[in-house]
Length: 108
Length: 114
Image (cartoon, rainbow over all chains, first blue to last red; front, side, top):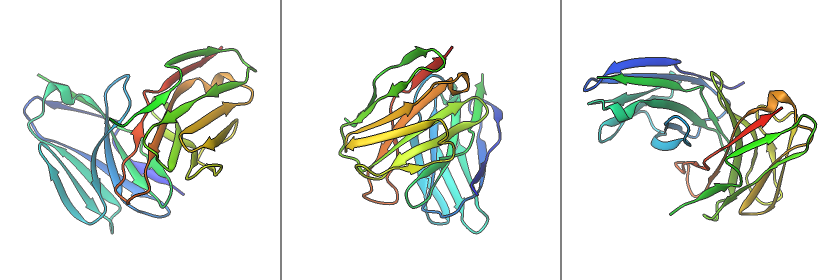
């Protein structure tokens, strides 16, 4: 079966660092994606990991451990505009499945 | 700029109606997807298509069907709409050029079935 878990909600302070975790159990693995989705908008791509380790892209970094079925998204120097839902998604050979998303609220 | 277009942003239908949700992409992508998004449940895969006239069931295909007669268009059909199909429907497409090919999403259709 397919199972992708992430926390439902998180709150953090502007300027701080926050880590959003994702664990997965899927049949087939061709990579893990993180998407950002602001309220009322479509998801947009943030990052991709297929090999173990850390991928850094500006204020955002994503980590993958395939043996543990675990990933996290790290957001640094949080800004108010980072308030959004963050979706973890796993690619199998042909399809793409998502976790329920983590709603992040950034407070002043 | 890449574009995935869904025909309607908001749609209101009555129980029992046949509903068509249209999605068109202009990127010559092979793969296309239909998801529904509900609070607390996230995006759930209804159907996907990896090429013209090909379709595969996702996690929640019951009550839905799809059509992919042309590469750029992927239609979701609700044969007889029910209130539990009230949801946000998101279409997405992707190239098969590489494993890191990301999904491009349309703006979504908020469907209300009364």
